[in-house]
Image 1 (spheres, rainbow, N blue to C red):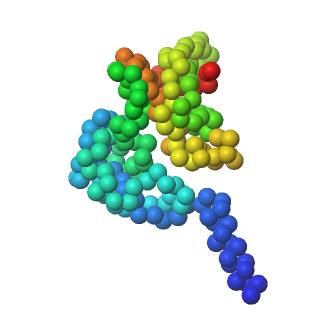
Image 2: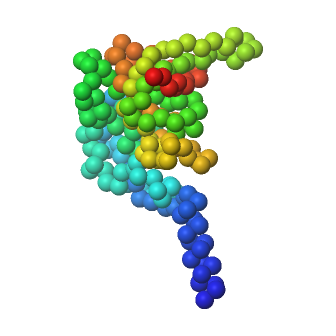
Image 3: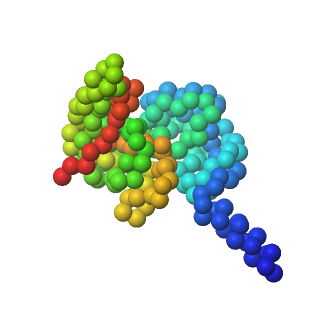
Length: 197
């Protein structure tokens, strides 16, 4: 009896501690460019080790064929919901507004954000040695449209030391004229989001 209880406790601990398990999900089999539609030849169903509570993944290729990708994905990547363009994200926004996926340099800050909040997007460049450190705001008061499911549902927007699903990616609504500068910001320096009133 004692052994059975210990075994059960061990199983429960695996799930509560967020350890990875084998799951059958859709992954990318050949690189998909941002903005392109997914074809059946670019994806397949494979078993990979994932968080058992990760609800952002897909379990059927049919769910994804014809969907448009918001961010470029390389072969071997597990496709998650944040990677898709959804028209519902822009409902009620001004004409000319686009949904822009951003990868924040510090993924932990995503846990502070919720859809509907206004943020300034700040780009910091330089390393303090060869180049002077400089920060500039590249978008002001843009609304957050989407954050990873695990971040949005956490109490007070906080997670206990766990990196949020999505690896720092959020989606904001911005004027189309800002989309190139925002989407390519992470390649130029450190990208952060600052909450504003």
